[in-house]
Image (cartoon, rainbow, N blue to C red):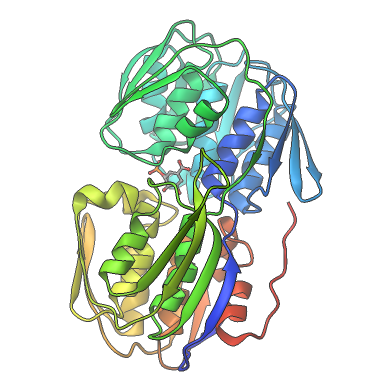
Length: 435
Ligand code: S3P
């Protein structure tokens, strides 16, 4: 439970973006199969990435904290060790789906399971394409537990129907250790961190618009890399400033990979002012500082073609829409129903309780903004992004909002509520977390 008091005065503050969860998962998984020790600087301390660390440790990989970074002693490609029990991915869909691609080609059987929320999430989307490559991956009626009979993969052509970076990544990771090349055709562009990491490491990947080809390799070189800031985490801080006219927040070290930043363009369209200052720190994963200034927001029509690149920010956009003048409509976003919670239902319920007019569609929502919202008790539905999105709406509401299940924010952004407190009231110091 977390209590948010609506604020009346604009605030001005600065924060560092939390480390990127998507990039951390990928770095951990590639380092686990590298030939030697890799150093992952500034890893995400999220519960989701901890699930990847725990699963890899159960597969024999030594992972040690090192001055706030992580040292990973890779075992070599295809040389993970048979786990003693079921691999537990907790709440993390990324752990389960990406790891499935790696486990499919190991010389042992494994079982992946997760918490009650992950057990409700669809897994055939990853099992089927891996099976096209010669894997034997089976789900439990479409859901976890996922059973994997490890065997050599043959490679081949996979046509994906799901617009999912997780599934694309599972196929690419599987293809690295197949007998012949793998071609993966995707329906749309999605976040491309796996591709960028392959290029950084010199792995043989060719990308031609919606077609990706990976050739098998013998070894992954060990590497050192700095994890960029998470634009999806930074989005909540940007949102907090955006809903208070005149408030500003300067967010440093935000990942500015173009497959992750569309939310900030929509935020500008809604009326917030954003100053973008890219830096040149990493040629593979661009980053920089964003300074966001709040304004009276207006509703926006979200192009369904943009949904895959906005998917994690749609709960936050719903919260902003509840405070904006006019209507905001999102369609083509049925994927939201199979995330950590049914995010359409969870956001509709929370925002209605705060006073907004929300119409639910099977594949999205229409929201009529209301000013002011009124603080009350709301429920995060155990979902980190719902918890943080409702907190942003609550900041601009009159009175006090109690968010049940707010501790779920640690799934992607540990310390979020402390950072929010510090920014908006200057009261609570930001506490670091440990992995
Ligand atoms: C992720 C991909 C997205 C996103 C998730 C992280 C990733 O999921 O929602 O938070 O790291 O690849 P889908 O691939 O299911 O769209």
